[in-house]
Length: 456
Image (cartoon, rainbow, N blue to C red; front, side, top):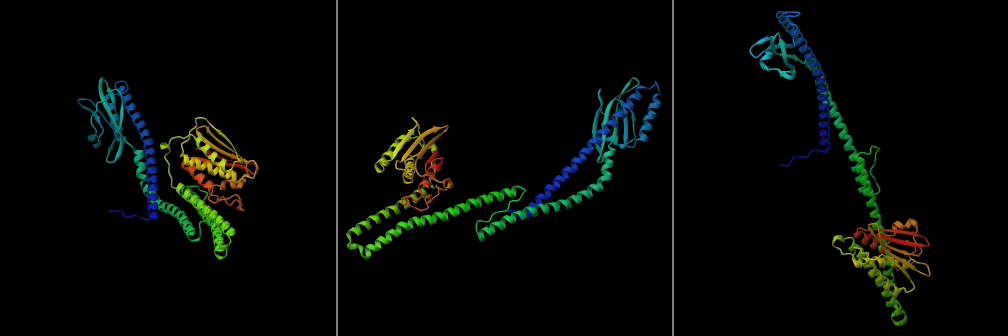
């Protein structure tokens, strides 16, 4: 059978109430125990003094007074102390015993050489009992002196009404305090719920309030605000991605529509115009194909998870030389400088490394305004990491744009003069690097260089 869940307000109130009551009980008990230990020590000292007094008197029998006088002293002592009783006995007889029913519950122990003090409880009252050796004349006896803990008993008797009253007051204050704590806790949770509802109704720019307490609720609010910041950034990036993707797709589609409409109306009979329009249409189709392929590649990479332990290391020099040879055919005027450590290996799929190099080299060529294009490729081991560097002498990237260049469809060149670039290549590169638990950094200076560093 499932237990019925109670509202969180009542649960917090109940738990807070029990905790406060527990603290109150522990505090009260600890105070009582501390006071009892103090009074018990004091009572033990009195008991020890009484024992030494009786022992000293027993040693002076027949010197200062007779056995009869010692016996009378014991009787007077018993009559004068209502809370203290004495018993003196040997193995065969009881020499003296104060009239009291308390002796019925105490055994006739034989004392050794040392005294022993024990705690006894009779009728819910605390007593201290000392047992020790005693000599009367030439005879050896055992003496027992028992004394009630009057101070603690009197304190309990006189303070019991106050304890009951303070306990009741403590219960009331605990209930009030627990209710206050619960309301304060619930109210702060309600503020967070209100903020969530406002976000749901009005938009994602609203944030939870952070107080100066810096407690657990504030930490929850901080985490919530951080999540909302990331969500808002992702939302804006997604909106920008849709807008930019639509723009990139719209441009070639518009060109295709224009040329095909023109050919349908009057361009069929003009062979030169027909040939030129068909070439443009094929070029725009290739452009559309590349955009779609890049988007599919990025989508595929976001779902890929690679186990590095199962990968074998490859020699990057082979891949680098292969990519450079391909580009030399297309761009023979570009100067390539390579610096690759000997016997270096990196755990990466050859096709992924090739794609990284193609993306970096392609950008280095496209965004270069120099007559003599120079691209440096370094592959080396730095500390415990494998590092790939691609450095060009191109137009560079403004510092405020560096953090954005790896976003999908983002272009530093707002005029979009470089129509062959879709702003998606570095997003693909960044995703490839993350698959291999690597990091990618970009540094640049306008008009001088751009350096892409990848740490595996």
